[in-house]
Length: 367
Image 1 (cartoon, rainbow, N blue to C red):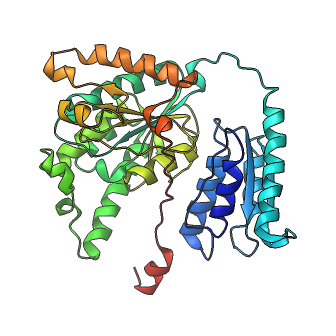
Image 2: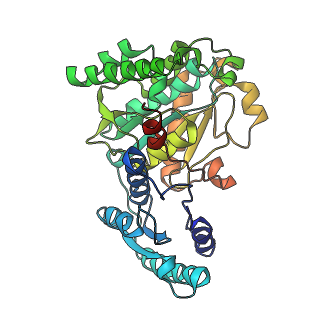
Image 3: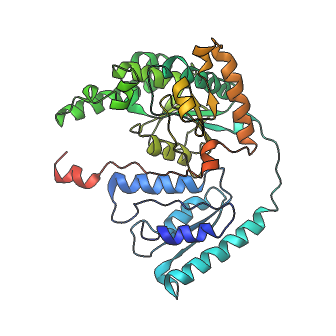
């Protein structure tokens, strides 16, 4: 976090570079340490990334060298340095980063584009600012796409585990074995029980005020909308936050369902593209993975047309078949894989947030 501005200065001087800025990396331990290391390492090794420059201050417990070693395991070109070890301080560090970056850009021009089939794709499934229309318009459209990716030998990841509550019986039926089914039940039961110990009835926390304004009345309604994005594919297993899938097919990721944290975790897990449904409208993007926005609410599509890639509202206004909108989304997904920018990319929205479990407060309050 102490070198965010230096990283931004370096990236601003390199065409095609992005700075992954965040408020973490120093003084962390336990699960928070693990989350940050795994997420930053995963972002650096995402298939969308050619090369990485890891910039450290020099006194953090999450070191630039550690992250560089982790990222190098994915055969990325990786360089690292610490500002405290760079004679001249910030100015010299920026110059050093730019020099390293220009060398990487020169080498990247030797890479030739070649075709890949969809078995190489990992797709992230996200929703945010949902309403009662999402469940019967945009979300089932994405479910069709997820099914297709899995059938073609690819990988799909559904996060937002707090939005599986009330649909356990549907998810467990799709588990590939009893162990996966038990794990789904266990993680949700444990979460609700621990929340009650803190005096929190989570079912009274959800849906959010925005969801309620959009017509959602219960967590079960919201959860049904969430899980339909995964289609009907068998569930291979559960992943920790930002953990890479252990194989092909559909996987579930345990993370809190906060849009930017969620998409950061998906990109760190290797998702090259993320599809986000947002019937009330959301502008956020991701610095590593393109985010395709799908909206089923006519008003939101009109109000936030500059943020929406796929208008699915004709399912209601013109009685368009869900399958027809899925074909349009499929074409957009292919175009995105081939380099066509999403609305969030055109706008330069590169939001990043790493999930935290707040280990310190957990110990302080004996929780």
